[in-house]
Length: 150
Length: 88
Image 1 (tube, rainbow over the protein chains, first blue to last red):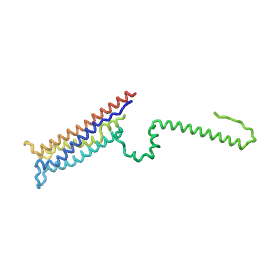
Image 2 (image 1 turned 30 degrees about the vertical axis):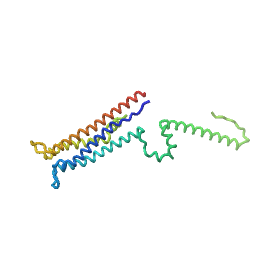
Image 3 (image 1 turned 90 degrees about the horizontal axis):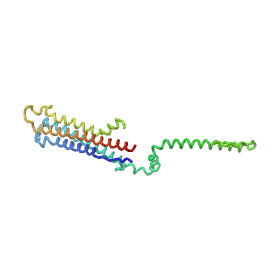
Image 4 (image 1 turned 60 degrees about the vertical axis):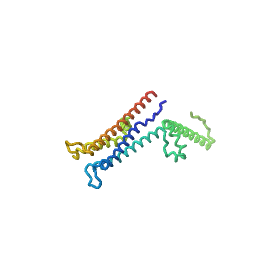
């Protein structure tokens, strides 16, 4: 029996990289003022404009990257069964009806087909026998021939 | 498993964003020279040192994130393949 190993290293790798780049973006925004190449009150230099214009998108995009890796991590934890998905709270009414088919999903189609064929054959056989019985009761004077169908 | 599924497992959406940040790091490192805010032949100014340093950090870290994810995902895929082989 194979066991599913939960490896979180790849997500932590991506989240760490995103976090470091997010901090770098924040530093880029602050750097012109912290390092003094953008004096307060003066017109903005090219370096300051460039750093500021790059720093804000870098911080935002790095945050988005962090969120994406975090959602991938959550999906992996849900797939491994560590986290339970939220919709289960609303499912108890449908759970008995749905849980059984989901559990035996691979066998469902073949089993259903076989049972449906068998049920249809039995129903047809039963109907034909009932019709024969009705015909024999409505014409009692005729000699009846008992037949049994295998 | 199809090639598309393998690629999807090796390169998640976050890695595309990290690649974008890698390109931004390249721009940040070369921007003082492209925008000629760094005079040629003189010592590097404070802003040039800052931009080149932060750009290099961004390039290295984003590459580390992309490659690290691929390495770990490849290891997981190989483990799954081995587990399937032993199951059969």
